[in-house]
Image (cartoon, rainbow, N blue to C red; front, top):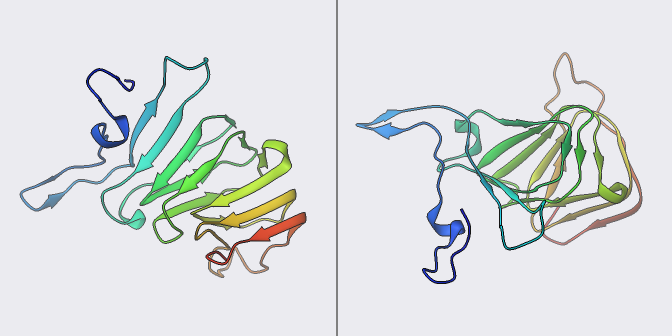
Length: 168
């Protein structure tokens, strides 16, 4: 699907991939609906992966990504797991740290060795180090709750560390 200038078809308002189903008061469960958008009018390789739910992120299974991830990703009321060894080659943008949750399953890399936490909660269970780390637009970096398997916290290091007033 792509934006049609003649009909004004807008994929941000008209394309939905719902998880589960709600009928007669019975909830269906499943991973977030996923839509892969590709604009044919632009150069090859552009895309946006949208992980959007109708309810809170806790109500649905997480979406799991691993390997080389080059598409821009938008998360709203969803949970995204980044697999160990993944490379984030583009941006992840969330709709606020209460609505958008990203869990790093292990170590990962980011384009230009720059981590951007833009409007989502990033949960880290291992130490990380980047040249720069920016947390903005109600972004948050946190750790899992203490447990038998997670007892020590994490170390976060960067040459440049920027946190805007809405983030922590």
